[in-house]
Amino acid sequence: MVSLNFRTLDLNLLRVFDEVMAERNLTRAAHNLSMTQPAVSNALRRLRELVGDELVRRSGFGVEPTPTALALWPSVREALGLLRGALAPGAFDPASATSTFQVAMADATSAKLIPSLIDILEREAPGVNLRVLPLTTRDPRQLLEKGDADLAIGHFPAVIAELGARQQQDELPRFAFERLYDGDYVVVMRRGHPLAGRPLSLDTYCAARHLLVSFSGRPFGFVDEALAARSRQRRVVITVNQFFTAGRVVATTDLLTVLPRHFLSATGMEDELAISELPLAVPEVHVDTLWHRQRQHDAAHRWLREAVSRSAAASGLQGADAGTNTIAP
Image (cartoon, rainbow, N blue to C red):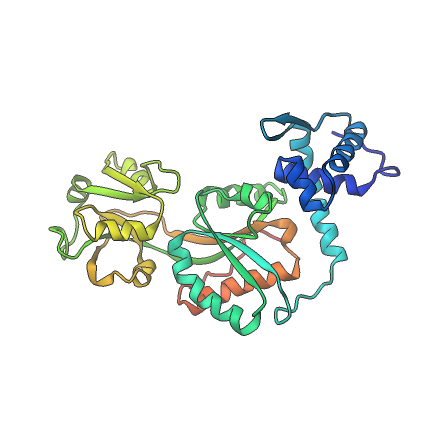
């Protein structure tokens, strides 16, 4: 454990350290801090002397953190966030705010949430900007840790399970989440597909050729997990990373895909697509909002979370269990 003399510690050194760790580049960190690069280098040198560790090493066009820096950074970032929250005004006035929020979500989620969220922004926060980032992972914690996104919205089963397990061990997780809505998936194909209009048997489903929406490109998803539990498998011919793309491809081919039921009404392709129920049971899909705990009590961030929740309700997505935060603040 690093031991520091807090009587002589300049807290600005921790701000520099946090920015360098986030950017992994001294030039960008200096720009973000409105400092010169030599001043950033000097601040790192002073912190190295206090900590007794090199902290970062030059690597390619940036810097690479040492194990000590990686261990130290989460606590430093959380402490700075809490300090900012304590010193900043406690209120957030959306009517006069000029904030920019960054939210990561898949296209199927944004297609349903964004229209009603834009209505809320135009009515309540006309000066607020929204940046929607593509969700390319089932574990967006690094994106939130680095501050590249304020919220991530999606299906994160492994992350949510891990956070719940840590709470059971009386450990305060670094991330919080809230159930936004529950959904289910259906088999989707073109209207004139030979399998359209009749129930699918498991044998028929497995014998077909499939398209899978996969953020990673890995041809194995939750349906494949359910099939493997029955010692069955399907042929995934192609993977794509967007639900809209999946809908367009199956509308003009004989491939089958699996899409969120609620998403179909937002595709503009309902007349071209046929749906069928999956021939096997799969776990219910929970869509959650996930954020870093240091933003928990930030007034602007709280308004954003509430706006997203209201957007889900206005879009007809939320059920009785929505809005349940299973991680204590």
